[in-house]
Image (cartoon, rainbow, N blue to C red; front, top):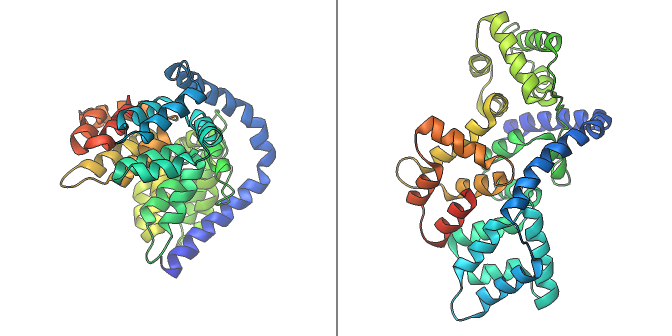
Length: 327
């Protein structure tokens, strides 16, 4: 990563960190609403994993890895039908019963993309995101696409969950929209970009980092009315490089988060070759968040089933595990 790129991203981090410090009280007040939303997802997950028994699942995985040859079907059945929290219980139970780390056992028994996906499922979502961030910045060169995807698409609650790895913002997630604020933010964005010589990045950061997706959509609409130009078009003209990618990712996620991930998945499979890392990352991290919505959006945008496309673009146990997660 170039010095200039790092400086740009660092500026955003500093802005987000300042927001985090000033909005801690607001977050605690809103956390109840977030918990209620999370409970809806959790209830669906519980239905999917009816009859959960960590002891039995640990035993099933032990048998799957103990015999001559590995029982991949049993591994797929357990990992794909349990929630992230339940998989943590299985890991703990496995350690208690057999004195071995389940991740290390699977690493020794599996290989390739099937191994990567299985190990990703054993991480908590925030742990996996932190690992991906470390991997994206490790060694020569930087996977800037991965950095942008992780840093720009997470909700308030998800951001807090990975704060030990990277201090991030507490994005305001009010359900209501403040029209006056949207109008003022639209004017501020214009004054910071097209309305001046050069671009005031701090002003862009303040708006894009602090507002909820719903509030941002109102701001983008106000910008269109005020300036007669789409906010994405303005960003394309006023910024460049990775800063432009960051801003555009935030805008596109605010406008249609599920559509954004559907596009990434389609691009990972279109044409020759398949980007397995992107498939693993998105399907694993969104499995208990909005994967069903992403599937529906994928069908709507591309007139194809996401499950069918994954099935045709992958193979073996890797294919079976991804398809099981999608169902």
